[in-house]
Image (cartoon, rainbow, N blue to C red; front, top):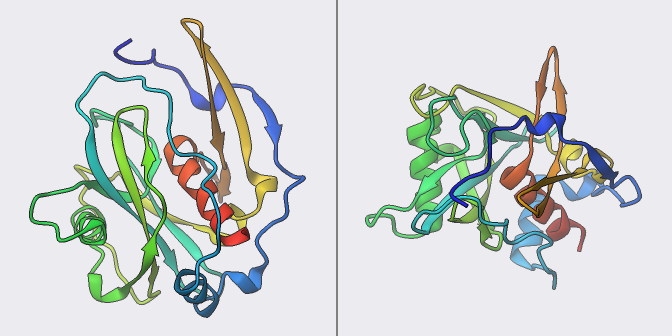
Length: 224
């Protein structure tokens, strides 16, 4: 199968909501607590590491910036991809992309891509560490780079790569009561994924797929 048929993920039924799992305590979401967690990481296992393949293409290494804006209530910086993109068009994503030969490491890739996509200056970013690699169904081997972002940052969007940027409260995303499981069947194959829909004023931000999967692994890392 070269690709999945076009479908609206928001219309795929929810079969489970994880309200039975505990939220990450707010005191664990402060800059000091987050730094301490990466300095002395716990023994833990990521919950989601690989999606079922849905596209025939050469594998590619990539990195994304799981950026935590250190406001009074910390938020996660997210973007929405334009509808013309060749992969994951219109989806909500972290700033990021494929590694270049000149990138020193995954953090360098994530910072470069964040600057190119949303104009985020690296001087406002403090990298904490990385989460385990996440393999998308489109054959991207993605390393999430977790970083603190100063609220003094300013953004300038590259509209060819990003249609908008916004923030979602970190506490909301680290509360499994907001994690919903969906199930979709096509050509005899069952696929399951998470969504974390967030009502941002009049706009519903439908966080799902790989982005939600990496956030779920971040939850497991913080809750371990």
